[in-house]
Amino acid sequence: MKTKLIAPSLLSADFGNLQRDIEMLNNSQADWLHVDVMDGRFVPNISFGFPVMRTVQKHAKKFVDVHLMIVEPEKYVEEFVNHGADLVSVHYEACTHLHRTIHHIQSLGAKAGVVLNPSTPVLMLEDIIADVDLVLLMSVNPGFGGQKFIENTYKKIAETKDLILSNNSTALIEIDGGVNLDNAAKLFEAGADVLVAGNAVFSADNPERTIELLKI
Image 1 (cartoon, rainbow, N blue to C red):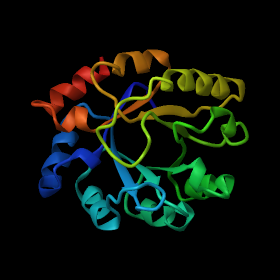
Image 2 (cartoon, rainbow, N blue to C red; image 1 turned 90 degrees about the vertical axis):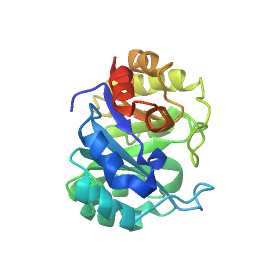
Image 3 (cartoon, rainbow, N blue to C red; image 1 turned 30 degrees about the vertical axis):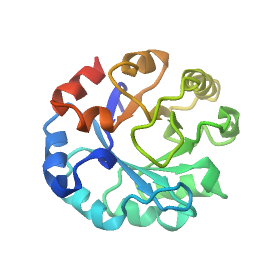
């Protein structure tokens, strides 16, 4: 996969016009479509599940990146892949048998990612980094869009990059939370490969132009 990717988060889309917003992303320079799934248990919010995934699967023409913020994600990964997920990421903090879950996702033909909350140290990934396709670093506490970016994320990017290189891993680094035009270039420079942007894209007067600017 190429790097310097932008993955607009559908959590910030207009759900009354979801097909329209997905088609806008299809026609934009966005690389991935990011889908945030929340269960109200692992995080203090509920987003959406398989009915919305069916709409995404029907209309999306780009790589679908599903981020499971749910307890017991291993129960649902197969159904998300069946509903069009090209990559499924599960939280280190929510996954008791992480190695098994990562390999199960990959056995289904999808890419597999692991997610770290802001307070979880990167070193916790030492035993799994060679197996994953992506590390998603949360740069806000998960659960709600529109939060302020946590500056310690830059340090965690550097630590993750070192861990990837020292283990001959090919994992990409994805950043989710508070990404905007003010910090995107700095995040890419720090070593991020994929940036998730929700409010920065969908609240913009010209979302497609904003996506272009995030990639610069």
